[in-house]
Length: 170
Image (cartoon, rainbow, N blue to C red; front, side, top):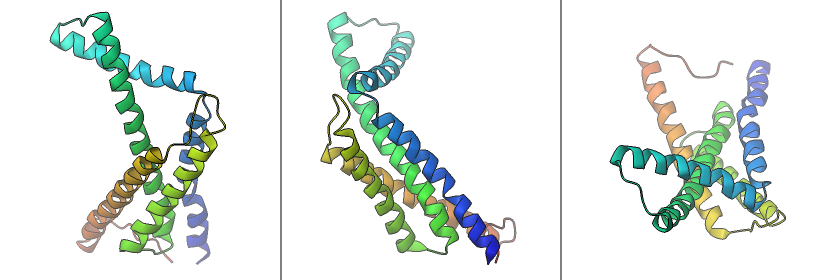
């Protein structure tokens, strides 16, 4: 039992690290945050222009970059909270939570962090607290928790066939 508790405490490390990364992104003032996501949009635009051998006019290019920037930001919200929910699911799984309960606890844990993180952003220059971002984060968390459960079930199915052992030992 002592070994499982030790593993349980260590299993929280990925979730805590992800929370720290999310917090650091949220602590960036709006100008710095926009520069980061716009850089990604520029790279994607450059790849598009290279593939199509088409250079867009500056006004059209800038409009397209700002639209793409919006989707990059929302996609980042979704993905980072999907990862967080999966990281939260790991220690809960080690504590023997399964099925809907595992999904619900993981998703709600990530959603609660999303709400507190949005509140934190309201104190950062140029940033705001957006309910729609919490909803996007929660949707990502729901998917991340579901994917964690699907992966565990896939490996557990293999364990039954004798090829992989992933159940925590006592």
